[in-house]
Image 1 (cartoon, rainbow, N blue to C red):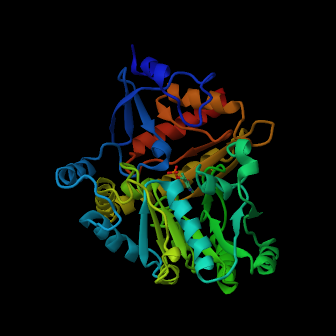
Image 2 (cartoon, rainbow, N blue to C red):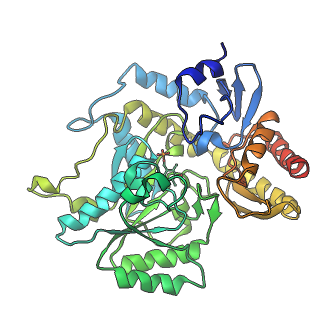
Length: 421
Ligand SMILES: *Cc1c(COP(=O)(O)O)cnc(C)c1O
């Protein structure tokens, strides 16, 4: 039996309608931007394995560091105990962030990093004796699949089965020149109830790589500060170079109170979540009263292997190669964008840094459930490219080590697909 057939007997896959989905592809090996299946077929990983991989698969440097750490310390309870990788990671990462970020709280994935951020904000106000329980978020946002993270995400097919149980969130449109003053007065009107505002800076990934201007977000964040509404930058996806700068928040002058990281944090090697915050938020939990404690943690909080992977990943992130690669991909994408945007089957193209997204003309509205999606997906799989369209939106989000030849092949196949599908 193949891996895929054995899988079909025992596994239930994420986001997958198991009745109609084809057999999964059994992957046995990865190297650079390429994955190998059990028949030896190669695939270019054009989506960085769900946006997590930065430097290529099975990176020898990260592997070596992890392997050394594994024989030293694999895990230890993180309440009452600490270890070198967790401390060193916070010591190295905090100085790379906006300079108001002073404390690091670990968890083990992106959704949990968001849950922690939400709890920090809600309890911050409680600890200060103020009743502020409302949360502000953008329409079409995506912050994860656990209940709190799902609640602050836009209502969609993903949330539909649970909508009634999700706490109420005030959703606003992305800021533009036209609506910015309305958004600001909306916030002012709600200010005494608003605990926090959570946002994906510059790019709303799951929504279909929707992009918006830093300028108006910046204005919105300054306004939140003025109205004492705490702000949470969800950089789970945008962190670590994706948008062309180290963090999307570097495009802003306003500093968020809280930041969330996961995905690229470990170079895509291990599950790890990180929530950072200001001194003021941290201080609001200091008390003789135990009820003011942040009662949150996970068994694998700050796992030493995951922190070690993140440290090794930071070494690679800070090397000249990575910055050059990010610039190279950005440059190549923008050349391709000019080429593809005139195609009659392309409704829109957009790019931020290493992310390029194209909306395929379907004759119907853009939708995650678009029937075109499976045809596009299978077309590229046959061609040895992993692209995972969000409905009729295809995007390229490559590991930074992708070669020019591999990029050219993807670009060419996209043009072929536009003509053939
Ligand atoms: C993926 C993602 C999350 C959730 O992270 P998981 O590790 O998948 O739980 C949260 N926010 C954003 C912006 C994401 O892209």
